[in-house]
Image 1: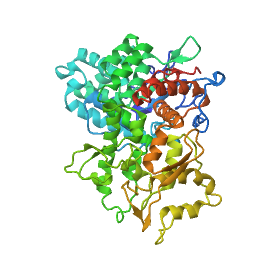
Image 2 (image 1 turned 90 degrees about the vertical axis):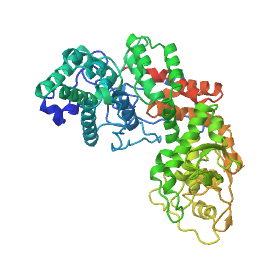
Image 3 (image 1 turned 30 degrees about the vertical axis):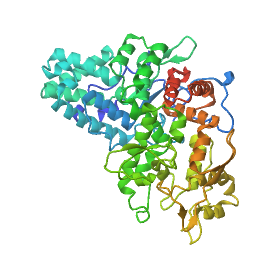
Image 4 (image 1 turned 60 degrees about the vertical axis):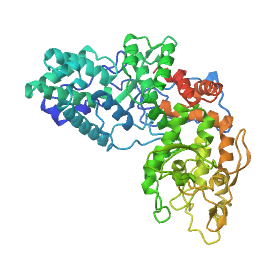
Length: 569
């Protein structure tokens, strides 16, 4: 990517000469571009090839084992901010809460189902235009608002001395590292040009706009510096940014930034900072984002539902996601943070709208923590927000629900159906259940090979309808929610209903390993390879030894070799 494009297309910057084009300051020593020597995304190679990194899935049918012969590291890279990270970053910089990224193109996602894939998060023409427009608007608002948000001296005087301080201080926060002397000179010159054209506020506006379009703001670098063992160790500023965006979804705060500036972000201090960040309010939504994506709640907003069959669903989408978020945060931060509690918990957050989903009654619009009397909706797995996504437009979907368990919780791969196979189910005929219809359609070749892995699991969800409400019958037929697990390491066998399935999964070593692996994929923003096995094994073992504490899982990932080191080019 040519870094100069960020300012070349900006009309306001063009008016003052576009003097802030990017150069040195982001890369490792000796580089002169934010992308020099880096992979274009989350790959395991050296120079960018323009192709996605190879996905060599770990786990699933066989436990992950550490083979020193294949041990290795991923390549250096830069990593574009997601929409949520962008908004948290500009909020910290400018106090802006207007959700400037709401109209940005959505993240393209990855084959592993996460939206923060470093390789996929590129900037193309449309994204460049969106970033430019947002930077222009944010800079105008900042220059017209409380200038102390940008720099303390700006609120009283925008003289040359303040401009110098402003460039250093605001630049430090925007780029998440101190600016080089060359960068300070360039940005100060840009401020001076804007001031000469009109006044100091225009200089400030142009300066802010340029920094918000810089690759140094929009990307996090993982270029590092050569280490004694031949690998590349992330710099303290890079590790601080990676830690902060992982644990709180935004840029490093003052305490973490000070450690990075002093060069004292040792492994011991890194762990201390990780645990400190987990105690901050910002950690709650940041950790929820992993489970929002892992359990596919991210798709709830656009989940299609037939209004004639589910007339109240449209009005409850937002409340359903808020309830799932509240439950997950309650388990992680107010409860014991254990995997078993997330998978099998019998508590829920309901209001007057949502109580009927759980067979309860409530008053008011505020979400309240309750205990389900029957426990038919175990944990996040049984939450209506999840079950609505894992269902069809007019009915349940044992296929989608079984696929979810296989791929997201057991880390087993299910191939896509052949292109010439009709995957649509006709309307149910009277006296026939969806289970009976699905069995009839998928019991023969070529469907049975894959459907035998999904249907018997998905049938265990059948007491909960297409939007996750409890039901006793379907189409005049009694519900059969008996199911079976097969092809697993340790939980093969029959079960009766979703609570029993959830309990089996929560106690499975394969599921526990898969959750650790999914956490690794999300935090690292890339697919794993065989070279990651030793790091993943250490993460899994520490997670298991913690009693399956999901916050300890995050700490374990931050302490792994893959987190702080990269492959030398």
